Image (cartoon, rainbow, N blue to C red; front, side, top):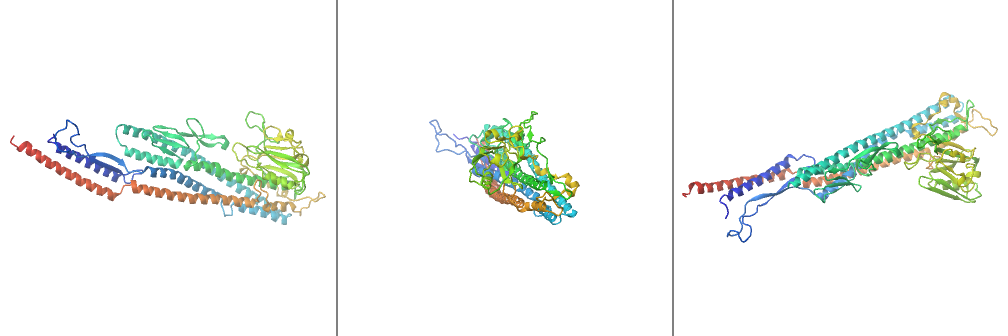
Length: 624
């Protein structure tokens, strides 16, 4: 039979239920501005009714209710929407980071201003044209020297600014890895607290909100995916490997990468392997440093090394007003001290490789001349030996085009004397040095007797950079130049002899009789003509075209980054607005619920008052 005091128990449950609902609403209202907070919703249900069906149950009609109880307090959350926000947040931060740094890169090019490298280069060419018009005037020579110095300073300044940005990116990568580790540790700690709360049959809504906020923050740094199949073993993956599994985390660290000039490389702390990531802020920082900035510096290096090499080629063969000749106009710092290009690559004190940038044959060739015999040239690139066949009916020009289009990372041309000239390009892979010819071999006679470059045909006469004294494979009369110091854009300069004596600036070329006149300006005209000739190694472009293409490339990448960043920002904004409409706290709705439960609480209190009055009558007023 039901207890006389069961009404009090029903009222108590009602008070507790409405009180819990009011507290939940108050929790929502006071957290309306809390980051990551999700609206909590209380669910009330009837308590188990009196009399459970069974043979020994009291003989009463039906079941008597015993009031309400709190079934659950849950977060209003859409898990699929949360996954989309996590995924899109990574892309948003990736493009925002790229946009920010590409804007810096655009400002480095300083276009269009008088201090830009393009404008300084224009003035450099104009100074040589002016010198060709007035080779007998010291003022024209002084202008040439000053404008060349201004150009070199502009190139060096641009290089240093790029290196500064690259170093800035490297420092930010180190900071970012530290912030990622902090998030990994914090999420692991929250996983432990959540598991403990659930083990105690609690629903840790606020802890779950805090963890979701940290996961969303982590997604802005790197690409991640989550798995919640086991509620007690929440897991976060990156590139298929787990970063966090339950309370256990796998932090990262940075280590110097010897193949990337010692810049920081994110690695897994537990095994030292490279942490590969392509998204988020970390992915953007790495791609900017290792691809965009490295590419731009390589373009500037290509421009610088070829400008100095081509100007020097003409200047060495010309004569200054003081009769001097054989002088380089520009100087650069070689990568190796040994004049034959020998270098100790493994640091054991012995030469083991040869670094040559350029080799030139002694014989004069004609572009349209037929070769007259066949053979196969083999040139090694970074991954394999590339073979170029030639036949007796091929012309020299056709073979040069074949070499240049064969992805050998070697460019072939005929120099001013008509000799075959081979130059190395910058390396695509981090494992190989820039501007180093790796191998040359010819089964026939084109590189040997015809061009006068190699001593012998076949493997026995091949040039191979992976040995000391490799220049022994070249003919004694062949000319060569050692590879420049890493990033020649930062190390080129005006020859001090020219800076001290402007009369040594060579503008004249001797006549067939070996006589030159001060009024002769053929060399100055030849240098000025470099402006409009497709002489740049590796791209068959003029210097002006190379700079224009570089600036356009940076501008287009910046435009794409800006557009994509704004698109991603709008996508994430819309997703977060959808989440806010679902999970956010609406004051009007919460106040309406508050009034409803306030009235429910008051009604329940009134019910208890009536029950108390009934019990008072039974206990105190009945004459029993």
